[in-house]
Image: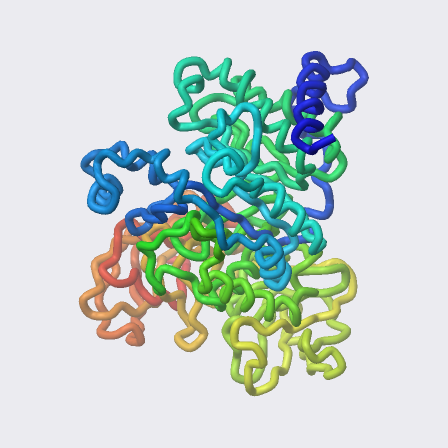
Length: 590
């Protein structure tokens, strides 16, 4: 029996079977029930996957700077927008979006080559856009009305070909699937009928036909999960589908579901695990492109692409925060992975071949922050990923465990000297030169589970000093600069820094900032929160980014002794940068 005929029969049987779940089914169609299913362990172990946005939008492959090119058809509707202007100039007013279908030929598509690149990148799973919001499917299905890659364009089952090639390399395969379709007439007139007759049959066909390891929905935001019948689908997926024991899903199942329901939570071009709160974490995944778009965007230039070092450090930082990275590529309409994207993936693979032990199967960092890099963990081991190489000694603040051995991950037979520098700190003697400038991994073998306390305590006179090296940095740009011993590169007003301190005595404290700010960049308003108290200040120009001053910003009252969080946040957009912040000091007023 041919695969298409077999799958149509399987879908029909599945739809009939899920009309009413058996009373003894392991999972019922409720969130409480389906979320009692443990996330299969392979997903947390594998850490790194490849996202692929490929469809008719790959033909024009254009979007305004910073805009997703796969939204081309949607953005064409704005007749005053940049996309419509580009379209008219290059294709004409009468050229409709569906007219791109014959030009989506994929004549250069070699799935075996794609799979080889993915394997060499160090990725362990792949997620292909089986159908984006335009509704064009990369596999044949009865519900697509010939709006698919077999009946139009390439004349090929792109999902099937890539699935076979990826699995042949030992990688796991998954599919992105848009729940809604922008211009589907059934969806626009009767969403419930669309879900019943179009969306659910398509989604189940995808599962039954290709048996994916990941189901990655999107386009859920217009309606609640009850309209999409998400819990019902998941109960079928977990009870009856051929992938019920291994499949993982994300959190995009309906309006309000993100970071609330689903197997793993998702961020998108967002927070990448730097400075996340510690404690119990729900498994999460950051998805983003190498550039600023998911689909290939010819409007992007070299500076729009992350460098290999950026990508390697981003992966490390995500693992530091307990997440996975789903890194996107945008192939061309003729089926090629752009060479710059291949180069970036292979550079990541080169690093992972030597340092994969510090990524795959690791746990998150026990440190709220580290001034020189990030950390991942394994039983009895701390993997210290060093970004800023100290001249001679690596200080590890807050570590109370005994260290039984230290070495570079790439030189396990050469022990490094470890010195206990305090009850809650150690230092490691390092070679003079950084062996890998993207990230060098120092391994500490420790006794017991990680025991870390980076809380700042008061001096004998009650003064609390919070140095930049111990700051928890949250955001996209701000980071610790070892050479200046300060938080620098602080260009985004949404970035902030904070410290956890223990206040021994309640009362009033003078709040002082030690900082530098270049002439022409002053004037940024900042807010210093000391527990519930708030102090407002304005950054002054000090001369250069290296001319530090200490200035009292105001007075804060701490109502009771104990744990307090101190946070510094900009309240406006800086001219060039907020400041280079070296320290915050709380000094009792009496």
